[in-house]
Image 1 (cartoon, rainbow, N blue to C red):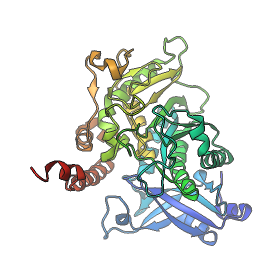
Image 2: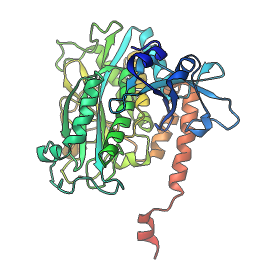
Image 3: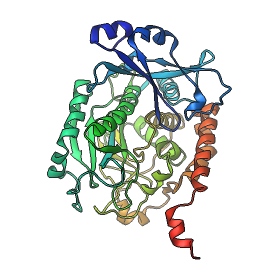
Length: 435
């Protein structure tokens, strides 16, 4: 971990630092700082006008400062003279509560006060498209079931291998890369870590994939559903709760049929209970709801959840338990804000523990063909407006996340919905122009 950024620059031939933050819409914002100025920036932060990003601020607000976290430092493998840093936002001498990284750190602190530490990993799916973004980059990638197709994977070996080698050089522990279920779609997996580290790496991974794809003449997208006939981009999260020393997995109980402890079931109960209200964070775009409960795709399955449910090693459910001591949440999509994804899961799980929530019995059903047999399951929202209304109604989430974050996020997302709703689509003109 770099503690003195100026010294790190001299010892590692760094000429510039990208001091960054992620706004409420998940957009990565940065300033490029020369190494001669990094000492002051480490103390005072890089200045930004909050209104210029998707934050609930006005032009009259004072400067906002991103204080870089040295522990997040990543030297760009493809441009090693530049180092990236995640920053925490401050204004008027205090942290900006309605900012994603600060909000996640607040949940991490709440967990730490109870002796818990969330460890997680994410599976980020993405498409490699032609530069104009209208079609996939590989015209030969046409199989009806293209998942794991070796030929299609190796036709994109240059970019996939460069991304993997970059992760390896950064010490992330990448362990597999594959062609995913949609034509033109890929996934790359790396080892899990504590929630903040995973979120920082998730932010950087999305930037890195887009940049390296562009360097190879492609356009990468994490858009939830870029093509109606193909599987969408999910962002599945694997997680477990540990003690503060990370010496004991508190979710593990080898005496349980599924290998989960009572604490794990309570945490799971909280996730299931709050999932509909968290959809606006986990699935934050209008397009997100084209992936959830979508019609059958070319491959035969969407691989996305339809309702709130959990099971064993069964990918048709919102939550599956693939192994003892952990579970996987399959609800998030590629547009999720990396900090909000971790924040939402941790807030829901901690509330589940506090309330001793029972997740109920697991459902051993194929939810895509037998979902009608599942009684009492909660429906996931089918559009962003419904999701926002569920978020707004949740008193428990407001207590956990705080008024400032909830009010700011809802205000901006409702405005985004109004902007979308006020637009006229090609479908509307095609179907009603002559009505």
